[in-house]
Length: 356
Image (cartoon, rainbow, N blue to C red):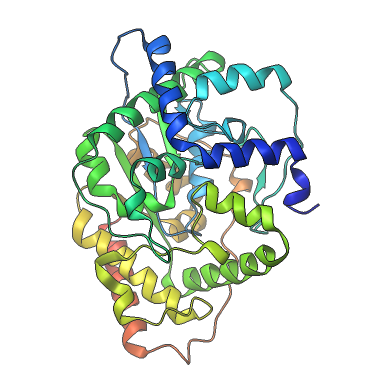
């Protein structure tokens, strides 16, 4: 079944309506806030933001947090009217249906269903910060400003936690995985002083090869599946395919090839992203070695628990699989770029939370 075939005609209409009306939904969210909070201040307890370049293991880490029972997350049931989760869940609950897990579009063995934890926050960021989203890239994020969004997002996180708590009383903390938050770590730390920010990383050549493979895969799917392309752009999934918008960390794009069908592009992007994080966010984020986690899962869970500020986390170890190895040909990649990536990787490992 193709991505497009999973959505009925009504589903597509609702999604297109949601994607086209963010400003109206912000107004509705304000009305929902008045009824939900009744003048009380939202309570956001140590939110956790998992963020990285795509293909760094962020989905698995979010699943670990979700399965702990302590963390509240978005799920696919929150779509498409993400701005008003209380009202939408109340309305859509009348038509609640069960869903059989299926492999996600990435073709990487990760199974998802309508109740799976997922990140859709980028829809919110897009609505409040439209100027950051250029035609072919996302501009570097300012570290301050955005008071209106901070207030909105605080209320939004509190609502997600409250909704989760109805079925899981221990789910008091909000958790998300959002790849583009890697450009906003400074902003998040200033807005939410007690936030925990976890940045997983992998060996750069294999990581870049995985990014390239997914980009080519989504380019092909977008040629034949128009709704998938529309959906990904609507939710702010600009990581791959026809809607690719790389983040322009420190102006890296000006000095690099923009041919995203080459390994060199993704290595240059990787170096820019993680190099920026090391330089700008040391002490503000926990760098998490995903390769070491896969090699020593139990020790990795302990390290993740420390990074998330939770006593303990658990997951069936059978669910932890090392990423597929690609062994790419690097003969066409500039030697200086390869060395720069290796240097950044060594610094990440040295700065990491420690999987031991």
